Amino acid sequence: MEKGRVLLALTGIHPGRWRELLAAEREVVLEPEGASDPSITYAVVWKQRPNLLSSLPNLRAVFSIGAGVDHIFADPTLPDVPIVKVVADNLTQYMTEYVVWRVLDHHRQGMLYRAQQQKKIWHESPQRPAGDISVGIMGLGTLGRAAASVLLSLGFAVNGWSRSERPMDGVSTYAGEAGLIPFLNATDILVVLLPLTPQTQGIINYGVLKELRKRNGLGGSVLINAGRGKLQKDADILRALEDGTLKEASLDVFEVEPLPKTSRLWSHPKVFVTPHAAATSDPVHLVPIMLRQMAAFERGEKLENVVDRNAGY
Ligand code: NDP
Ligand code: OXD
Image 1 (cartoon, rainbow, N blue to C red):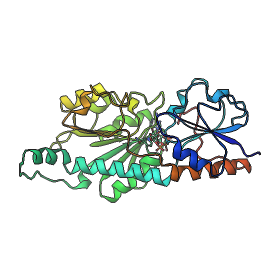
Image 2: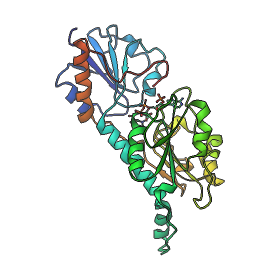
Image 3: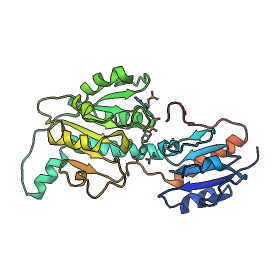
Image 4: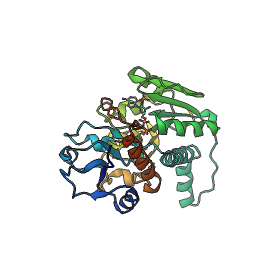
């Protein structure tokens, strides 16, 4: 197979470093140039504009610069070529850090103590051992499993929910629709690491939050969403916080991003907001993986981490 040219089409992300690193081994065409170009065989994309990829007559594969690929599937004319998602130690590590940071902050009452500090209140609240708390991870894939293993090592009880059965040592696992309610009923801190698909859209709604475990002494359950914003209903989260169904939430992702300045989530005292920053895609770590994959593909080897089109992730 001939060495193909790469189209770089990133929306909302500066292409400079990506282009520079890809150019070490490949000729790179930067969108908006490149449409219909027969010399382009690969596309490296983030939220590419619709119909762009279908205009490339010799496209062989698409590389997402993120672990999520919903931004690619948003294109209604996606050509039938393999779509490769990011699986990289560096990104996994970032996500694990985010999840563990947020779980520990909620568990160790960071919100309460920050509020007390503001008012100069010296008051120690009761502490619970990590083993008393069940962290439920929705989406026990690459990122969910990595976070689960660190949470286990910290002593938390860990539950995991996935589409198919995914056994993991030390984790109580649940699968599919039948497993959802039992999973929620056994979970105090819900961590969402699902992909956005037609099946998962809006899954974090009031009814689901209501099913989280209710226990005396914990003051309510906690939601941490670092998956995708459209998995959740922002208004349902606010309702659950207002009526005590939820004690607190850490949200990295939102139905609309950037989170509109008018959103109550920004100023809610029980919500911790980050700007879709849980795990950044670092070209220094990700481009070498893409270049290695392109070269291997041209030697006739199989691409790794190809998305399942039917499943949508
Ligand atoms: P994986 O594909 O490795 O894992 C996805 C998991 O979700 C799998 O366990 C899968 O089940 C499960 N799942 C998918 N659909 C369903 C469903 N309908 N019901 C139950 N479980 C389901 O993905 P990653 O771990 O690599 O990434 C997860 C997501 O994290 C990404 O798609 C992206 O949206 C988000 N992300 C967010 C970032 C941020 O900065 N906020 C950064 C990186 C990723 P099964 O195992 O059975 O297939
Ligand atoms: C991703 C993301 O999908 O950063 O990797 O959201």
